[in-house]
Every structure is written in structure tokens, then in C-alpha cells.
Amino acid sequence: MSRLWSAAPLLLTLASLFWAGNFVLGRAVGTGAAGDLGPVALAFWRWVAAFALVLALGGRLAWRERREIARAWPFLLFAGLMSVSAYNTLIYVGLQSTPVLNALLLQSAIPVLILVAGFASLLALLFFNRGVALIGAARAGGFLHLMPVFGSLLSAVFLAEMPRTYHLIGGAVVIAGVLLAQGVLRRPGLRRAAAQKV
Image: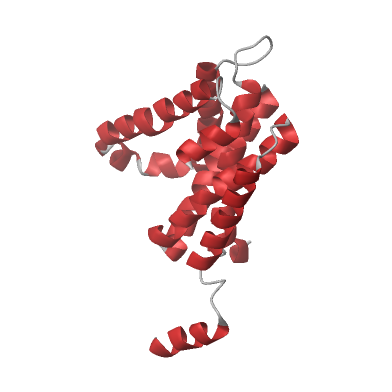
């Protein structure tokens, strides 16, 4: 488990996969049609379920840090309203009228709620923050561009929204860019030269 927790590229890739899956699920169940959750209800229940998971896993630690949390309460409230509440609600509203691929490119139900809360709300944030801690924000940020790649695959499988040729070309460019930024695509001679400089 500690080896997994130290594998930044894997953690960052999984975070992008989980966030892309959030868009697909938002399009699939957040339309407000008969039997579906509406976008506001999906956002609300997603974060209620995520809060319950965080409370179960980290409630004791949060209680120990309650003075720090209380001191940062205004900032935490503002950040929560803007980054979690408004952002996700607006994503789900937008997904009512646009395909997943368009929504992902613009941003680069109990079982569904558990899936969304566990993966997109909890594990994705946990993995992404750990990846940033391991390799830095600049290198970790490149992995966010994998979301459209994963989103196109997931939406093709689960929503029958087939990607167009330009989506496939864009996905190949994104993958090549991430690999290049991580140093995977460098030629051996360039790697040796870089290693000798260090």
C-alpha cells in the first residue's frame, strides 16, 4: 500500500479518471428526468455522502484539530461554497444540455451517490493532493488534462456518446503531452545528459 501511496503518476491518473467519471455519471443521472436526480440534488447528496465518508474516516483527527478548523472557518466556508457547492452544481446543470465530452473539454441513486462520493469527491482529491505532494503542483497539473481522455472512453462505454476523430487526435496529443512532461518520452541520450547535470 505504501508503494501505491508513493506512485504519483498512478495517483494523479486515478484522480483524473474519477473526476471524468463524475461528469459521465452527472450526465447519466443528473438530468432530473423521471427517476433521475436533478443537478442540485445530485450535487447536494454527493457531498453529504462524501462528508459522511470523511467524518467516518477522519472524524477523530478533525476533532483534534477543531481549534484550527474554527479559526479558518470563514475561509473554509467560502472555499466550500465556491469550489464544491457552486462548481459541482453548475457542472451538473450544464450536463443537462451538453454531451460529456464538451463539458470535460470546457473544464479539462444510492449506488451512484456512493460511487460519486467515494471516487470523485474523496479518492480523487486524496490522490491528487498526494500526487502534488510527491512531484509538485506544476508536474501534477498536467495529469488533469487526462480527464477528457478518460471521459471520452467512459462516455462511449456508458452513454454511447462516441468520440469523433478530432477527439481521438486530441486525446493522443494529451497523452503524449503528459508523458513528455513526465520525462517518459525523452530519448535515452537526453536522460543521461539531464542526469549528468544534476
